[in-house]
Image 1 (cartoon, rainbow, N blue to C red):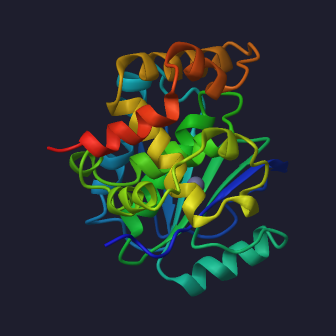
Image 2 (image 1 turned 45 degrees about the horizontal axis):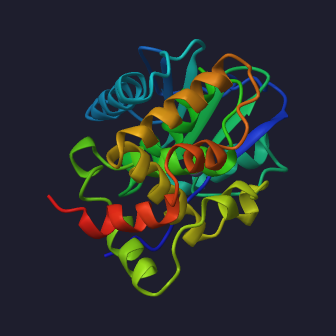
Length: 257
Ligand SMILES: [Zn+2]
């Protein structure tokens, strides 16, 4: 079943660095670049840190993005009410969502509350945080596509993502993902549920489709990292792989375990 909700999340660097430590936190742990503070005991939640370490490893291994160069702060709340109260006090002008990644002048901060899909939210927002801890910017659609890709557990990323079935219906119904359409998005509010799914589809294609597509993505991210204007990823892909949209459709048609 395709997941109904989603989340999300990204607030570019318009916010100042707010002190986040005035609240008394019940528990605090550090793991790699991630410093986690929670208003409940983190005993039993150690898997969240392993999840983030795994996302970090995959960003390095698959996309040649170096490990985070600055810390990432993860704030966990025991319920929606405590999350909302904190966010309204600290970030009163931020539209409320189920989970948030906030990047201001200081370290990236992820805010998530405890519920059934807490690990999904932590992996999704944590992906944004790890990307922005290594790269000066990431195009909006690609940022979301990567976060959608990494939000599921590693063993589900290739074949088990809830987007896969819905994406196949998109292709059957003539609603194929258009990368140029996604590249035109400038504001998170412009990203529909379908846009998230289609951004995921392009990332899946680049991760598991023709090797040239992954190479173009790696080069594109490398250019961003070097502060070189990267151009449009779609232009690079089209030059390297003519008929890119038909290739994406073919990729998903043939994609089986
Ligand atoms: Zn997101």
